[in-house]
Image 1 (cartoon, rainbow, N blue to C red):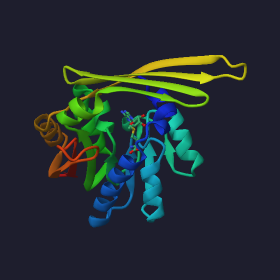
Image 2: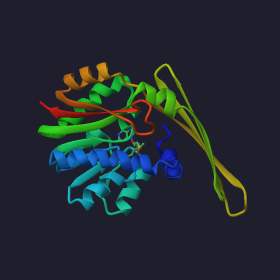
Image 3: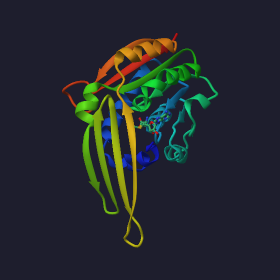
Image 4: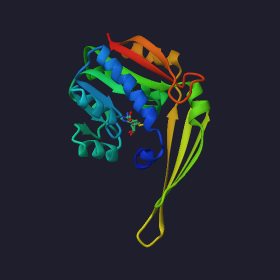
Length: 231
Ligand SMILES: C[S@@+](CC[C@H](N)C(=O)[O-])C[C@H]1O[C@@H](n2cnc3c(N)ncnc32)[C@H](O)[C@@H]1O
């Protein structure tokens, strides 16, 4: 899957304000519940862990993308490019922020939740966001072309049968004025609240709260934020 190519284009997508807003919201939950000792699953380039570090909250990150984890490590953050089921320690809280859960196919999601429960201490929290159907149909779909001095990025996202397929095309100018082209795709999966609730229950979580969240628009909630507790 195109996670490595995504890591190359992420900074050009113009999502900084939205990501900051989402991170602020997650941070407010961390403060309210006085959480510490956090594992950030799908930590990306470590922006949320940097907020945690600035507030003296200890954090460890994992991500499947080696390139994203290298960026975390360059910032002095504790992070590894390993899968969730390879994590050996136990934490008081797990976060999965900005679509991470939508990257997991429905058939693997209950196991993913069980693996999350396994790395949490008793009464540990699991806090994550997912895209609503509105978020997929009305916000995430569409095309975007970004032209920079030495790069050209094409993004084409199409939602069908509860899956968003995003094709990424990336051209980068070389020293002799030729372009290198890379292409890949990412699939994200829409998960209905009802099936999320059932899978969380089966994995040993109690859902404490689900909040409708307007990240990209004021029209309708494009995300849901789940706060779950290991029972
Ligand atoms: C949109 S980025 C969000 C990054 C970060 N959480 C943030 O808030 O900025 C989604 C991240 O999830 C990672 N990811 C996708 N599937 C994953 C999995 N099964 N385990 C760990 N990370 C995963 C991707 O590599 C990517 O870095």
